[in-house]
Length: 119
Image (spheres, helix red, strand yellow):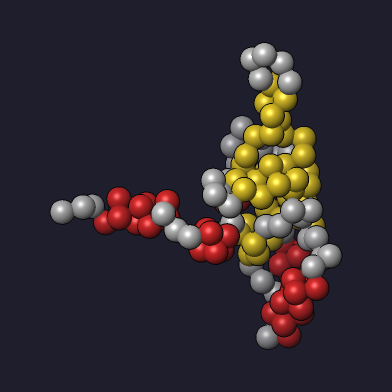
């Protein structure tokens, strides 16, 4: 008999890309929450985020890359130095960040926010 927690972890690990993408959500800042009437949103490239937990707590920056396979965000200003020199981005889990500004270049995202605001 497999433990239920192991089964759940395997489902998350083996999930297809469209389901993995849905899990890359983060909480909204209180002012955005009041403005749009929603609690959380899927993080996209170009969103402004603030790290709320962990080693990089308090750092604000723009999302440079969203990595759905590993559930991570590359945020500008958060880098690690390699042993041989050079820097690599550090991926932060989306549950550890709060969205402080939205990238509204996408018309579908704008429409979704307007729909939610009307409810």
